[in-house]
Length: 217
Image: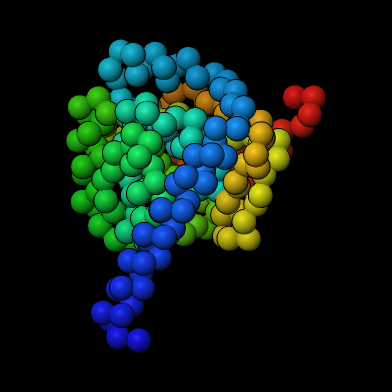
């Protein structure tokens, strides 16, 4: 297949994925029952116009994206094909984007993110995205917090019923009428990007796979 034919095929896949995927997720999301815990610290930062960095593992992304739509959040959008589909969907839910990833355009994107945080913006990160390894943070999130002074707030997701993909991140898609619990960590400013800071970030985010919310929880 020629380069031009590959580009056309990629464009068709993107168009169909967004055209079909966005209304399906919107219909699903309308049925979800969402509970947010310990969200007050972030709400206070947002009300005061102070920046922060929201962090969620890649496999838990969908529930967190849906719960935080139309809240004035910016995000790093990878140039990887599947991430472009997610970014196009998220734009309709009020998210803004900086382009780049850990492998392509990451340094330029990080400069834009740090500048945005210094101006009071809130950014969302998937520290193990876009391609893993699962649950292993890349340093960009820590560097952004360290350089800007913006605190990191981790989001841990638990879901009562979900489809779990066979992908590297065990991506969770909550089933219709599922209950979702999002627990926000206390704000924390990364002092550096050392192994100790990576371990602290992992502790605040919890396990990389979405937890199972029991019937009595």
